[in-house]
Image 1 (cartoon, helix red, strand yellow):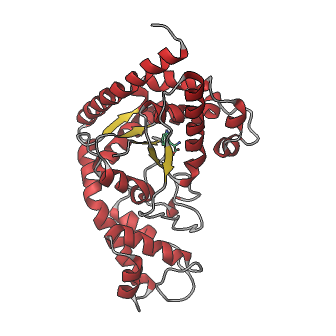
Image 2: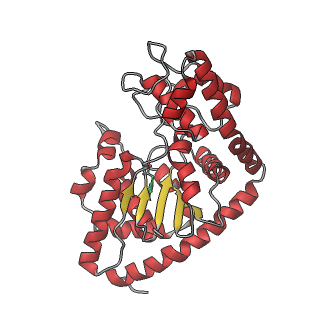
Image 3: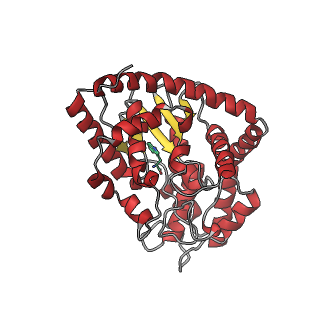
Length: 325
Ligand code: TRP
């Protein structure tokens, strides 16, 4: 039973790419020893609106619960509720080097040509390392864009252990082998993302069924009439992947089943399947939104459980580094 940690930022609106790409897998694989964290401290590294952050944190918790994360089976919590994250990050700040942080592609992209980028943005990967290392996570399920950050966490852990004695477990990133990589419906060359150019390309979990249908009906397809996954048919391939993710049927079986259908009918099939699959999740989310106090209570319990592990790690870290008390 591997110890698992993953984090998600409460920024932007959750979409079906998050759901089919990561969260359904979190929900099926969850067990004791898995930590799932809403990383609100990471969300303040870029300029933000406090009221919006508050709202998005609770809303994201509702979505994760609606998707099936079960506080009885895993630990779901909010990063800032467990103070050890910032404490650990400071210690790791003193182990990480400017050079390695400057090489982070995500920072280079986000800071490009801007002098006003926050120090927190620069330090972002060190806080992420603290998230992971506090729980001795062995596996960190993430998207490919996070590979470099997980390798940095591993390097920092190794260096700390070498300098101060065996303390941290060396984590490794895991990437979904199953599960779908859903692309933008308008710009199929891009992964579906919170920061898409147009909302038409992204289906939010919070979209209505009508909006979902409309976006799928307007999704770009390809010239030709065949419903077949192929490198030169990215639009159709993406819709087939989406249908596959929503129904659980494999793409080859779907190709056979849909042979001869027109694109318009195919899209209706996809829209129905996506809406059907999301219906219970959307309903559960709406119920949870009705009772924010219950959600807060669940998060408080999650934080308490997370703190048990995190504070034990910090006792060790403090002793190793020579901090007294
Ligand atoms: N940086 C991650 C992202 O943007 C979020 C994150 C923060 C995270 N801490 C983490 C992911 C720890 C995995 C493990 O997707």
